[in-house]
Length: 210
Image (cartoon, rainbow, N blue to C red; front, top):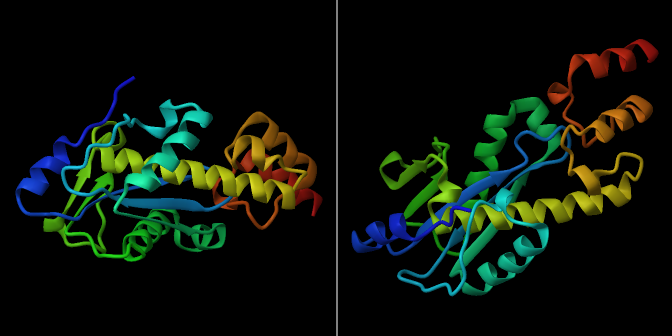
């Protein structure tokens, strides 16, 4: 497993950017539920005492443990989301941008510089951001945001699974698994679904039956 580091952050801290935020999202490819973004600022030159990595490479239990460690060691952190209705109306890219922008705005202090996982934020000054390819494998701040976003969205989907027990959101978190497809065929769509993400082969029989 590739672990992230503070190499990017250290260069920025040395250049006088004391509040460096890492930003990442989760849920872009899901068929249901929100896209959720997290922003994390660590104290300059912090020593974590634990190692971070891309949230997708970690077990659920390890993500939960690290999420608590991150909250304890972060200077500031925040979470925001764009729901399925906004995603359907505006598209996934504007929804992701909105979630990331709101996460940054919700931090107790505005960052001096933002490290973003891959994406460029049109709502943030270009000279104060760095879109980092595979950022959650490189930057500790982005990896921390990735872990928080994943843990909080997974927990949210478990809660939504209780409200919509027929779909099994607690198991697949809204992604297009075989079981999720079967449940859509059996029960149709609910208000959490993003219709534009779902293959026409699944939607056509539903429309014919309506």
